[in-house]
Length: 64
Image 1 (cartoon, rainbow, N blue to C red):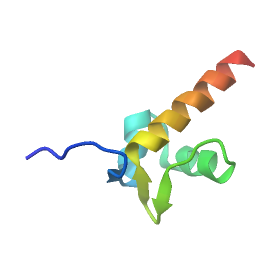
Image 2 (image 1 turned 90 degrees about the horizontal axis):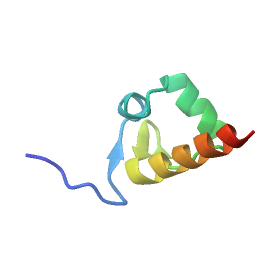
Image 3 (image 1 turned 180 degrees about the vertical axis):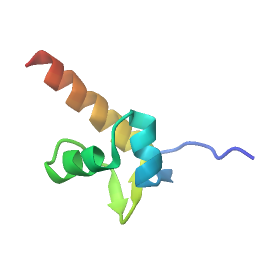
């Protein structure tokens, strides 16, 4: 059974890193540096919020 994706849907750090194509450490560092948001607690990320903030980060970095 598939889970419906909404603003509150979360995923583990490992799953989020795999989804974005980055390492878990890189994901955590981006969050710690304030580049992305979406972390809800230990090992949990809001999928939609994190993806949107990551796309914004990558877009801004491409302009530099």
